[in-house]
Every structure is written in C-alpha cells, then in structure tokens.
Length: 442
Image (cartoon, rainbow, N blue to C red):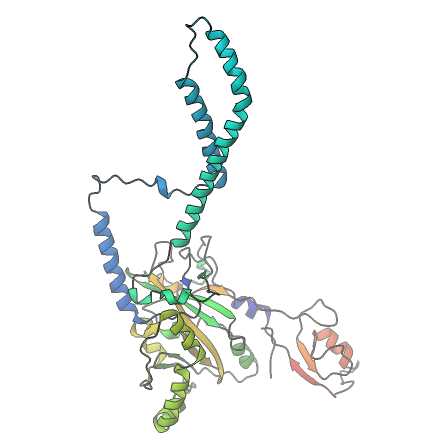
C-alpha cells in the first residue's frame, strides 16, 4: 500500500539552505574505480605533498628568467589585431628606412614617379603581408589548441593513472565534471543549536546516493566529514519509501550499509533488528555457494570495463572475510573504501540504494567550519509531482488500475475528481471493479 507525500515532507527533501561550501567539483572517468584507500592514509600523503610544495615555492628563483607570456591564451580577435598592427608597423619602418633623396636636382620627379608606382603596388603588398600574418595567426591558434589538448589531469597517487591503452578505442569516453557550486551561500541558523569547530586538518568526503528503482538516477549528493559516523549520513538520506511505510504504519527503523567487507547495521532504535545477521549466517553456512556467487560478481561487466581503463591487475577471487560493526560506532576514517566504487545502503526491508564515495579532499576555508552542519546536502533531486489526469490542475492523490471509465490505465486523480467519478452523493461507491491505490510522488 502506498501513501501520498505532503508538501511539508517534500520541502524536507530539499537540500540544505544557504550553507557555504567550497566551489568546484570532482573530476571522474566513467567506470573508473580508484584503489583501496583510507582517510588517514590520504590525509598523510596529501599533507606531505603540500609540505613538499611549500618547500619548493620557498626556494630562491630570482636567478631564473621566468616568463609567462607564452602561456597567455589569445582570442581570435586579439590575434588579428596583433597581426594587423605588425603589418602596418613594418610598412612604416620601410618608409623610414628609405627616405627620398631631396638634395638631388631630379629628386622631386623621382619622388612623384615612385609614388605613382607604389600606389599601384601598395594594395598587393599589403594583401600579401596580411595573408602571411593571418596564416601565422592560424598557426598560433592551432598550437594553442594542441597545447590545451595535451594537458592531462593527474592525481597525487601514481596508481590512479590511466593507461594509454584506454585511449585506443575509436569511441573514447571523455572526462566529465560533476556538478560544481558557483555561488556562495549564507548559513540558515534557525535549526542550529550549537557551534562545534572543525579542527584542521579535516577530510571532506563527497557521497552520492542513487535511486532505489532507477539505479542510474542520482537523488542526493552530500558532504561528510571523515570523522563522522555512518549513522550521521543515514539520518540525512531521504527516500520516499520511509514516508510511505511511516504513513502505512509499517515503518521499520532497521537498515545497514555494506562498504567493502564491512556490514554496518543501524541498531540505535530498540525495535530495530539486525538485517545483516541472516546474510552473515548464510556466508558462514554456505561457503561454496557464496564463493561461486563472489566469483561471478568479480568477473562482471563493470569489472571488465575497469580493467580496460586501469589495466589488468590482481583480482581478489577469494571471498572476503565479512564482519559487522554498528553504524553509530564506526566512522568513515575507520573504513577502507575505493573512490568511485558502488556500495550498498538498504532500509525498510528490501529498499536498496547504491552509495558512491566520489571524492575526498581536505576541508577548504570556503567550507562551513561548524561540525554541527555536517553532513551537508549539496544536491537533492526534485520530486516529480503527477497532476490529476482529469482536471490537470491539482496534484494526484490516488491512482486507479483497470478502471473501465478512465481514458488511460493507470489513471491519476485528485480527491475531488476521484469522488465525482467514483462516489455517489451519500459516499457509497458507484462501482468497484477497479484497483485503487494512494499515489506516492517520486
């Protein structure tokens, strides 16, 4: 049984208002998954790189002749202006280098004759000079485009470099940029009860949550601190299934994350049950079957795409040793994970979402430095509100299936249109040979 979501609940699904975050966003290659890493390992390596960079920048480069003129990118209009200025400048220099000989008796006649001759040839000379300069401009522009195409992004870890073999296929998937923030925000202090400062250095993780049915549709992006628990992340994840089950009186507070080989059940509520216990028991009692399924998983289509990009590496064919830790007792910095890999979030029995840790970075001065604000929702998909199929004005609250008097199947109704078509004046049903559901906007 499904229930409708009210406007107040829809507003609760909006992203956090006016919370400052650093501009920009992670860059990723489709189907690319990074090596296994941990937050402390990343933090140590990045701080080491920053210290080395500071040491290099502190060196004395006064003896070096450093010029950045060649790095400037000119527009086509600027290049044309430079070319035309050079043409006319060359013409003026030629005139200055060859002045008329006025001290000779026939200098005046020679000057007139030379002017007549040059008058006919000026246009052709100027045209040839312009053509030469234009060709030079074209060559400069082509070199700029080649230089831009030659630039490649790299990471601090040499393990994450892409093999050249990945660029050989005719249809190469280009690198794409995720959503970036281009405007600063103001903090909405209505719901803030305290200010807990974030101590530097702190690592910020970018986490994506995907739809439970449309697996490729992203519904949320969140920023989580490396020192926060997984329970803090779960409390910020919005899924309409929670609202439906709550209204139906069948709400189940149980749920769990599966990240690498660690199950993280949510047992904070006394009525919650450990959904991971049957899975762990099956892994223990059916090792051979579990091993076969695991081998099928690691030889799947996605893994083949990753090998084509990252190159053939060692594949862990041995079934991992799974363990269970309650999510309010484990932090992100305690876990091993891979950037870009898909992990599992399961709740309300069998409602499962793909969870992706897309990016990891140090906290920036433009980020919010109040720990109480995190996790921060930076993106929340808009709920798609279905209008009534009859009036086309109000939001649908009911849906009927196999209804003989409706123009479409299924058909959506607001409360008023449903009553006019299906109920008599005394509230009794006019006919009952159809299936009726409360409609859930998603």
